[in-house]
Length: 141
Length: 141
Length: 141
Length: 141
Image 1 (cartoon, chains in turn orange, yellow, blue, brown):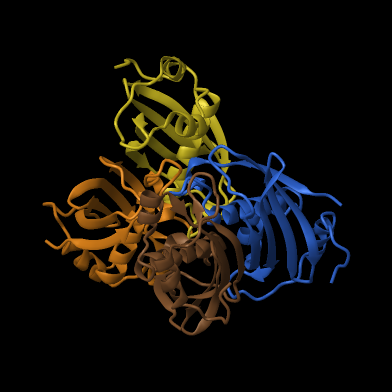
Image 2 (image 1 turned 180 degrees about the horizontal axis):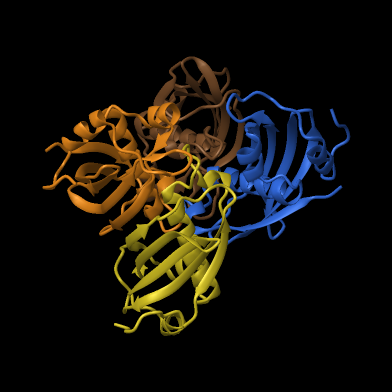
């Protein structure tokens, strides 16, 4: 099992008037991680998927916990692994830590869809095979 | 039981390169609803809470589903009710619909905290009483 | 001469780690004002322009001053007027005040373009006529 | 004269419903560049400036041109140089290109200020000296 990692630093604009990271920014960061993973690990960049093949991967579920606050300058290590691969859907586990302390735990479900009508498509075989390298769980639906 | 409502239209910047609302924007909208609810329904604006009393309400959990995509110009009706009120925490149910169609279902847990050290505080009695008007569930911890 | 107005309150997510409005959020607010103006005053919503007519109005210039900082809870009054209408371009003046104090002064140039190739189009006659109601300056190119 | 460079890729959330980069995202990127420059080149991270020394550098002016649109996946090379260093203010020139094509030209003025009252402070001598390495223009006020 492989885990995909991305380092992201907390910038000024990630924080809100309370001085800590505004929680919607974590979702933005998570999508940054997902987007980089598609590009670097699955060899299927969003630019190619969206622009070239008129497909996209809208998020249909996001369950997240934020056990500790993050502040300006914190170095977050994001980790991504795959929980389950369906024919059109994928369940991802993401987590961000700072110095070993858990900051975010997030479970995302994405569904491969036509760009215009939001109708599910099946994963291309090559993409699906590369996804499997990141499987942390047991079964594959 | 009272339900708090807020109408928000999908603007150009809520959508991403796929043409539909980028899901982190829903979290931003949800916080807009929460912030307006604190101001209008609980009579405790974030400006007063944060600026005047050095407290804030960080989100520690967010479970969300996005059953249908939203597009530019869609009129979203957001509804907020209270699931459970603890001594320092509150569980909120939020939902956004467009023309009766469910677009977002979101369960948020917020914890009242000191602004600087993220240490829980108890809800002020008056705020807690007003929160109770929006209780949809059964018990109050 | 008519001036278009929109009231926007400073929310928690508009502010950054310094406690004041992050200046890119003013550009987001300005586009909110422009978008509402197209919808309400010009009767040409972005949804119709983009979705129905495959056109858009990308910003090609933005000159802005931020003489005073804005903080959480501030009520901003945005004003929009037209400086000059070209065949495909329009120069807009925007300003935001809070209690009479200037917070933002912004000059924007937008160009009506085909959505896919970013090639200028001429303003539809009806839209151009309605734009002229908001002209503050002298000439019309 | 030294030029500070930062590579940033256009992600899905930088684009809006028109499929190109939403222009306020360029301001966010520009602040990312400025923030990294303070950290890496001036050895004065925003975390230290804001958290440790209760100072910040609000933007008081931003003049920008966007000659060409950027799209999902574009690799932007941002360049930063210094136009003028005042006692409390600094004028920066930023530019983003993609494959040699100009996408953004931006002139920013930042003022070093107390965090709470927005009162100008003088640049620390060491910071000012390091800033001078990036001077592109002639004089130093």
